[in-house]
Image (cartoon, rainbow, N blue to C red; front, side, top):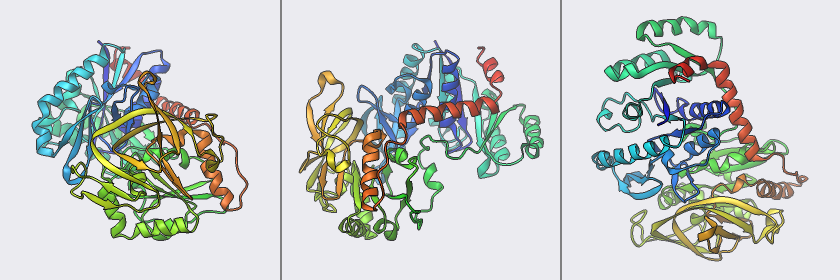
Length: 505
């Protein structure tokens, strides 16, 4: 069985996910067969494995850090919050049902069996498992139902490193309090990592000495606050750094992209490739002025499409989107946003809401019907209406992406010809719709395709009278370089010799 190491944190957003990513790359560089593992993840950013399973997007990134294929064993339990319905519970990449908190806690025994089975399977195939906790391990009201922090570490016989976010303030109190609240379990915490430090580390040193004196546990490193790291943010962390309403204006020759900030936004990592383009100024906004003066408006995916559509309507943002469309601004709908841009949404079985029928924004000639079955698969696609994107069509450009949706859309469908994978089981079908300067698709990850991404931006540049640009960077290569940079930052600032001794490497 594999050796194991747990990275947990004093709270959400401490930086656990990226630290696991960087450690996976470090151990991979050492020649180890390493894999990530998070027993339970609550996330609206998800990813589809090769066999069509759905897991947290963070674990997919960690697998990239480890240079291995993504599998459902890396995140056996995924919870996707759905508002008053509770959360959709995913086991081993497949939807089980929606559960509210008390119902899910009562389900702990069954969930734990799935977690331990997945860990055992992963452990039998790898030399080292780098585990990630969730939230804080010291939520004293939830310790008896914990399946992701200390319980998982105990099962895997994993030493634990505790990460604290100094940028939020109170890091020493958080580290000390976590250890004390854990009681006997706190003995398995072998060291601390302080993350997101700005300033002169000499000023911090007395605190580093004192926390060791008070807990008997060393600080293994102080990681600097890294800006523009070039990797997807953890769920919600990005939005905590942005105001709900933005008044930012496009600068000179930049393309202003406004992503409509939905209440139940999901898979916002779809837009990371756009954000890293040098001519893009991207904001998440609910400001009508932003929407009506953008160069591109994107209605993103949603975990509750109907509620987010009603939210747009209540704030009259649907009218702002229509105004932007009338002004020739490029409107793009992704997954749930694609559904919202259609004429109608039907939900006779109450899959997502109590509304059996609701009018969409009406920019696309499609209708969507929610069904109890969920489509989750990877796809390859060819552009059918290619000239509109400024890239070649007729099979010359093969796009890669993935689908995650409950509804099926009909009507004027035919923007992409798609093949659902694995290829042996695939059937050619069509996805997406375009009408004038509005288009939408179910395909997540589509902007990771460099030619299409640049074609979409050049279309906006053309409307502004700007010269088109060629492909500026390859997103996959840029992301891999960013993981290498993250790993280097960890090596420079963590006591890796201590960690190796801890693992008896």
